[in-house]
Length: 384
Image (spheres, rainbow, N blue to C red):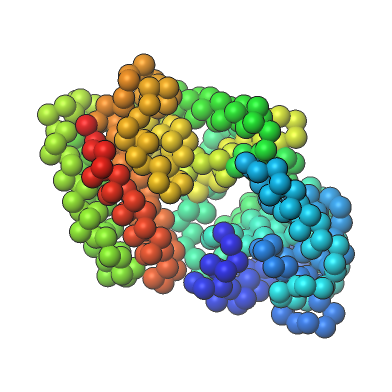
C-alpha cells in the first residue's frame, strides 16, 4: 500500500512509532523509541519509496527496493525506475520526505528496512536474513490471526515456514527474488503462474468436500446483505442498492443449480502480488490473511482472470475456453452460470469483509468503484 493512502486514512506516524516500539519489545525483547526528527536521523523515507531505511544502506538491504520496484511490461520504464531507486539509495538524507531517529542507534543498522503495509508493518533485517511482521496498533487482528493459524496448521512446499511467533507478531526468512507481479522475464512469469495453479490444486485436493448448493449461496447472500447494511451506515457506501440487486441474480439460475457445490480451503487473494518467485526458481504463495473455505473455483478464477485488477469482470463473464478449463477443470467453451455467480458472490463478500476491517470510514470509495465496475460488466455481458 502506498504511503499517501496511509497518511490519508490513519494517524500514520503515531501508529508507526507505537507499532515499531511494540515489535521490538515483544519479538526482540528490546526497548526502542522511534521519533520524527530532522537532526541526526538514522532512518528516512524517500519520495515514492514507502519504507524506512538508513541513510547509508547496505547493498544487501538495497535488494528490498530493487525487488519491490521492478516494473513489468516496459523495459524503458523499468530502467528509469531502477535508476531512480539507485539515486535514492545513494543520496543519504538528501531528498528525504521524512526523517526519524530510532534509539538506541545500533537497532537502526545499515541492514534494516521497515515497510508499513495495509494492516501490518514488516521489519527486514538483512544481517540475519529474517523479516518480522506485526499488526498495526489499533487495527483488528482478524486477518492477522487467520494467517497465523493457517500457517501453523498447514505445511506445503509453497508455504514459507514461520521462525517464531507471538500474539501479534511472527518472523520468517527473507525471500530472495521478486513477487510475480514484478517478474519481467515472461518465461519465469508463466512458470510462476503454472506453479501457483498447481499449488492451489494440491491444497484443494487435500481439503475438498461438497456442501448443499442452495444453502451455500444463501449463506453468502445473507452475509453480504448484513455487511452491506453495516457499510451503508459506517462506510457511507453509495452502491448498497446495486449490491443487493446483484444478489437477485440467484433467481435466474436457481433452476440450473446442482445439488452440491465443491468447497475447499482457499487462499482468498491469489493475485500475482501474493506469489513469489525466489532466485532458485521456487514459487511461494504468501499473504494468507484471507485464507478460508470457498468454492473450488474461486482462487482459480481470481488468478486466471486477474480479478483484483479493474475492468476484468467482462472477460471473466465472457469466459474464454482456455481459462474456463483452468477454473472449472472442464473443457467447457464458457463457464457455467453457477460457477460465475458463485465466484461473483464470493468476491463481493471478500471485498465487503476487507472494507469492514479497515479503520473508520476508509474503503467505501474503493468498494463503490469496484461494485460499479462489476455491475456494469453484469449489465453488459450477463451471467448465463
